[in-house]
Image (tube, rainbow, N blue to C red; front, side, top):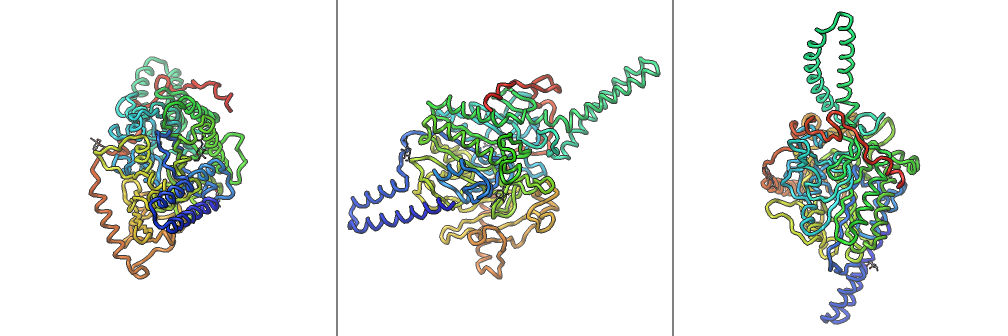
Length: 608
Ligand SMILES: *[C@@H]1O[C@H](CO)[C@@H](O)[C@H](O)[C@H]1NC(C)=O
Ligand SMILES: *[C@@H]1O[C@H](CO)[C@@H](O)[C@H](O)[C@H]1NC(C)=O
Ligand SMILES: *[C@@H]1O[C@H](CO)[C@@H](O)[C@H](O)[C@H]1NC(C)=O
């Protein structure tokens, strides 16, 4: 952090120096050009953008902003992510559009608030729960992959998707990455979770599992009653008892199969394009397989232009970590998992270097949202650390859930060792990537992101974000206002989650804080903070302490009204109907319900 800040000051000083040069030349045209040219060169901003760059997007899952070396963590080892920041730009106010995977990633992929695509939920289910649900990223949303595909890019997704699979019938693949602009997909259509590892406490929503359980129980009972009626009539009394016991055993198996035990088979699968390669996946080799796939994609496409989105399964629970990293960090299994991911980042960057693609690749690193404070097992913290920021994953308004690491590198075009504090959003990657690839964003809809290139190249010094809206599901919880003339950063919270226990800073005992209902507090007047002075949101301002309170709030309220006017009703992808497990949509590499396969075999072990 120190080094980067140092450079920032150096660059600013250099700027001053050349302005002096400029005056001493007597304001001649030539001097202006010379000074400007030198300035650009010194800070590495030569506009060497002759050809379209490759795009490499790296996204961590549930990683906190306080979990990385270059964001101030001195005890965790993330040398590769730090190297990326050193060779590029570190964004310190990089904001996720939602504090949870499914909606945040929908926004990232489309450049739009999740509420616009129907990926923001008004019920308790704020993320997709099954591969066999019918919700997901709508077919008529246009991802950045789709835009770049049209510009001649080869596009790939490796890792987590969590944006749905099928809509109406098995294998319609309406929500699948290949239907959303990716030429190649290898990874999990769902997300990693505890259920994917035996002997871990199941993590999937218990109520939903109970519903699934109930569902199959009713079906099984109906079938059994019919069969029992028929069969039992055929036997003598002693055989009747045996038959009934056998049927009871079968019933028990069906229940177990369809619920807890087999969630692993329903959700924890790996696919290559449309093929299921592992059902259930074998966690012990997933990291090395992903890495192998990433490197091979880069090698295959080194001569063309590509967009590769590597969506890590790290550092989500169950934090499966290979032996090489186990017990090596100073922060338990969570730290081990972070360090393993950093090692993977290093390997991918090395592959880019090795192929001579470093200067022709725009590389980006971020996390989908903040670390989960509630993820604990006894005293052991299994979730990320959000540094000085309050709250975490699942909380729509508090900074810890939405302020994430954001790093951009493109040697020769973007300056190195630079820090930018302006508000930026994960949704900005959409128009940025469209611009870099020579495409244009769709004109028939609202795009909430802004092209980052002018800011990253130092051509402008303020981001285009004036207001950013912080949603929890489909509920607006808070608004950030970057007041351009004063530079002050305000944040008003209309709704905040009730912490449990009170004052704990998280909702311990629940998996995640709620967005509405009994579990939240409505604030009138809103809780207002000056984030520029109080980044940890500890001292709410009041009309008594802040003379401009009412003026500020009426400006923010007006922005909310204007924002709401741009929203239109769309089909709800996370409605109960779309969320529920539908047996007929279950991706299955056998004959349902006998779904298991391992097509990877032992081929993965050599790369370990
Ligand atoms: C570094 O990260 C670990 C793991 O999340 C965390 O426990 C620790 O508090 C962090 N340290 C600092 C100084 O931020
Ligand atoms: C890549 O860009 C850096 C920074 O501008 C430059 O120093 C280096 O020589 C370039 N490398 C190649 C192979 O062009
Ligand atoms: C996609 O289709 C839905 C349902 O017809 C519609 O409400 C929505 O506006 C469409 N979205 C876009 C981006 O066209």
